Image 1 (cartoon, one colour):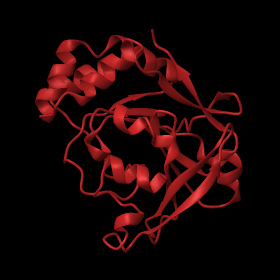
Image 2 (cartoon, one colour):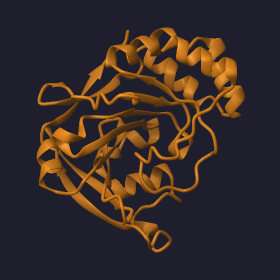
Image 3 (cartoon, helix red, strand yellow):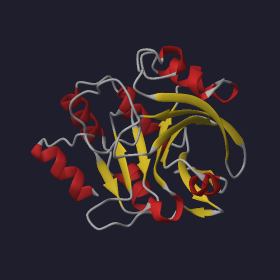
Image 4 (cartoon, rainbow, N blue to C red):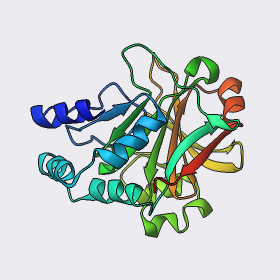
Length: 238
């Protein structure tokens, strides 16, 4: 990962999210992003602990013209102020896609809603689940995130993003709320169906303790059954 990150910074190369599509319909994002990818959770942990030096963080901010949200995110993970949320299935780290030419985990310092995200890519053949992404909530929102609906949560995070309150604006999308049973709880999710002709996958947005989780999956019994074994392990890095 260090070689990848150094190469990105030295060359000034940025990777866009076009084609990734794992956070669903959303307002047009900023045009460019860094992305840092890993094959294993251990690699992600090592990267967070060792690779994001002050110089690296400053360069990311300078190139992105951002306000320090990724710096705060990385530092909070490194010093143990917040845990790393890792998706587990039936007591084990999720089985990853392990596809040639693709990574299993990707961190975007600035992605949807202009915030840092961590994307995990499970083996969709087993689950009909293609992506699990994590956004850490700020203190004001996370204080009550688990007490409100998935749609209300999205409205608080980004009022102009697709949610039930403004669905007339996003009339092309089918949006509704659904109760999703996970391995340790039932959550209220905002479900977004982009109604794309050649892609039937939907996006499920819900709170899980201090984070927003987005699960991209095919609708149906296979994904529902797999989600019943999904939990999140909170890993303290220090």
